[in-house]
Each structure stands twice: as C-alpha cells, then as structure tokens.
Image (cartoon, rainbow, N blue to C red; front, side, top):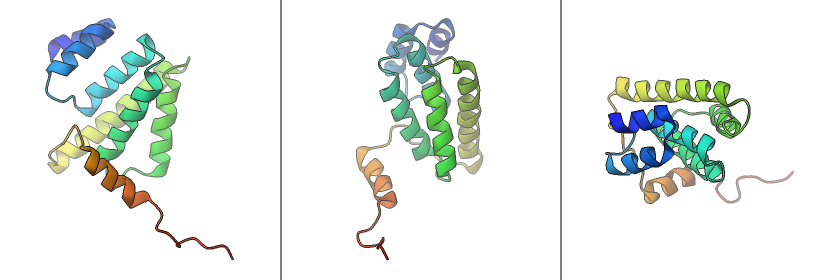
Length: 135
C-alpha cells in the first residue's frame, strides 16, 4: 500500500493505477485519491471515473441524502477546474466521515459491489408505475 500512497503523493498516475490493480480493493478514501489524481492527470477520463466514485459513495453510505449526493457530485465536477483544492478538501472530509461511520458500526465493507446489488439499489429508487397521477 505504501507504493500506492507514494505514487499518489508524487502524482504518478501510471504507478498508482498499476499498484491499485495489484492490491486488495481500495477503501473509499484511497479510491477518492486515485479519482482526484485522474482528474488532474487525465481529464478525459475524469467524468467517468468521478461517476463511478459517486456510485460507490452512495453504495457505502446508506443514509446519504439527495443533498449530500448533489454536494458530492458538484465537488467531483469541480475537481476538473480551478476550485480543485476546495473540492478535494470537502470530498476528503466526506470520505473520511463515511469510512469512520462504517468502522464505528462494525459494518463489513464490500468494496466492489456486484452489478446485481447495484441494480437492486437502483430499483429501490425507481418510481413504481401508476404512483404519480395528474389531477
């Protein structure tokens, strides 16, 4: 893990990504650090990687609200601009808080959710047919 963290600190995206593939799944904060490095070093990939981190954040933070999701999404988008430092500071704090909440509750963390679990979660938010009517 120290090679990964050193690569992040030095801004070496190639080594960070190669090391991350060899390690056990990254925790939320390390995945964020890699996402932020990609935002700086490979901006074309940033939107896709940021969206994956947002999904992961929402998977791991069961009590996340729509306001929190909007804030995370806005900060992830800001990583590509001149507000990088502010966005990074906010995202790090949110990731640390989420990680510490999970540790406090003693929840086992599944860091790579399966597609099936993701679909189940999305179905919970889907509107059942016929629930909204005009009138």
